[in-house]
Image (cartoon, rainbow, N blue to C red; front, side):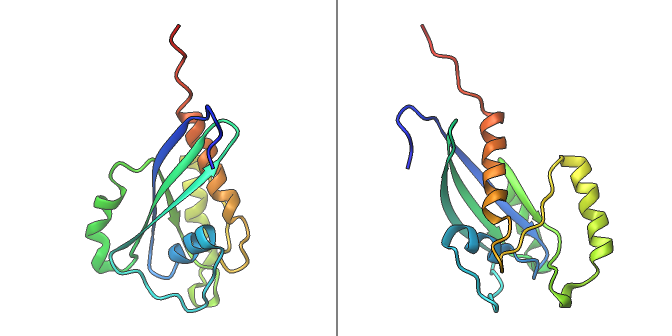
Length: 150
């Protein structure tokens, strides 16, 4: 898993978004390579771990999949406190969640603010691994190796 001499970055990653945006589907596709058409809503939060090996570092993700229901919103700060990164799920492209134009405008605003936006599909696995590898690369750049003591 880790390469000899490779530094390890432990990173808390939180998934945020409204109910039905696909947070659990995204993480299950990434961690287990699975997709379920009728995924049950998350109650409170679910926790997963995953390790990604890059040339410059090994990133150990502690992933918190938060519930999107309104009644759990007050718990969100507890999960994202101390997070190194967040994936904010804006919307599902499934017909029942339409309104793509307004939501895309919102996504554009996030892109301007954080300089990163990508569309993914847990159903087809489109851009799922790429999303997590991009986050891992950004974390590795944000945590450069410490100079060796001589």
